[in-house]
Image (cartoon, rainbow, N blue to C red; front, side):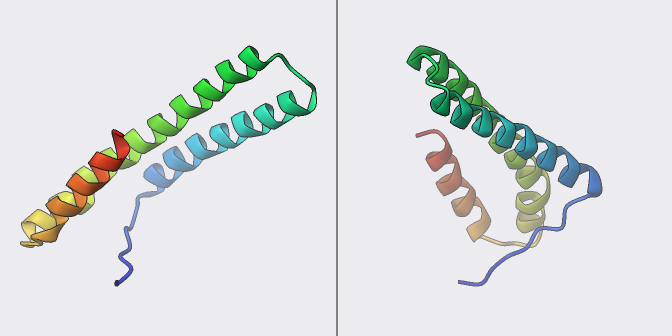
Length: 94
């Protein structure tokens, strides 16, 4: 399988990287909560917040993918791009 690349704008890279940095902070916070014997329900609440942050990251990246990669693929008669997208969306909504 050939590895594809996506060239992103500086703004896209910054937006995605900022989301990942916030998520990294949330994960570190979860780790500290475990180490500090924080009440399970409080950790679960924070974990759900981190899961929501991952969903937000995926939604933003999916938007870039649709507006860039998928649109370009369709314009260039890439018949596999829609099948690839559908497969990815099925995984995202499981």
